[in-house]
View 1 (cartoon, one colour):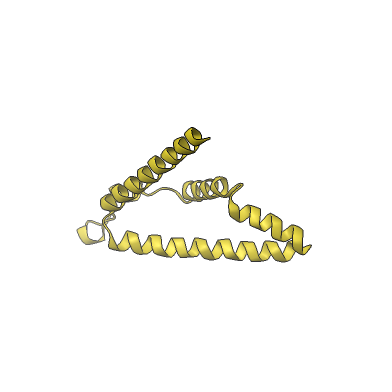
View 2 (spheres, rainbow, N blue to C red):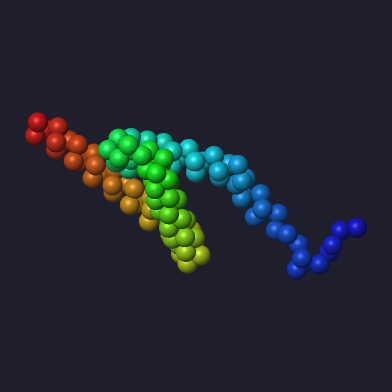
Length: 115
């Protein structure tokens, strides 16, 4: 007794590939949270809070800044997802990350050898 119209049929293969809401939420939160721990933004927030003596205002400003940069990242990411093929973007981003990794390891070895 189901609908047999092929135009109205939901592509079940594609809906099963989508990650769940909580999976995406937990992944994005944990990734960003761990990446931001101890970074220069957190240290700047700590110093500003200590200097100003107004931690609530610093928290509001820092939170607004993080939300704004996150929004910018989401908007650019959405534009990339809509305009670039996923496979190409995955390959290019992987190459960039590998390049950065090689660069940082090389710099670490150079600094280690010089000291």
